[in-house]
Image (cartoon, rainbow, N blue to C red; front, top):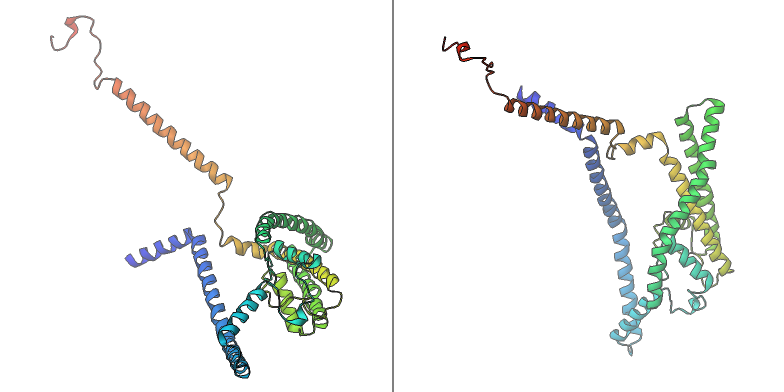
Length: 335
């Protein structure tokens, strides 16, 4: 008997706080997914890092042996200075000295990566004034970019998603959720083809050291605004039409980001995903429930007030009602 009561109480507790339990499971799942990613990346990349370290140590040791007049301390200072300059996009190599990082087209490309929060990191401001302006420019520009992208996506969604779905639903009489799923799938395939597969083939042809996988990797990292910066197009020393190439990449990034947002918004409007999101959200208080709560409070207050009034009236009246006597002879005790 006690076990059944305990199980029933646990079931009621879970049902009344279902959204909270779903949210806790979501947080635990996200933490486990982070740990899973860390384990996989560490197991895959750590051997390559160790191999690269060994190769660098061997090259450094061989260089010092071939140049005995150069001390290891002087070489360390030189390499440290060269690596610091490389972090700001300045290379000491002869074939890289012809490219400037802060001409107009390169600065335009940098501004687009800042406003879109992609941030490849291959180029960074050198001066204190440039760093301060980058902060102010980002504080104003990032919300401005979000407003711009929201307005553009809202208008595109009307013609790319809502009207086609409604037209097919009313014209052919098909189920609206089914039409929405098929439309979202076709739109995603079109976006992948036009902004991932085709650009990856173009980048693999234009960039000498990139294969198709590396080009596709760059497209995904860029349009998902991850922006690791390990692959940046247009940085080769013998790049033809570098200025025009940089402008084209800037346009590609902006258009691709808009298309990605349109696809994500299309999937977010699917009825199945809406129901899935509601599992983890707090339930909004409905107007009917709020009105019922207010009416309940009003009735409770009215009941308490009536009881208090009745209690006060009882206090003002005597406990035994004594009839008024016309004369002393009317008193039954005297009689």
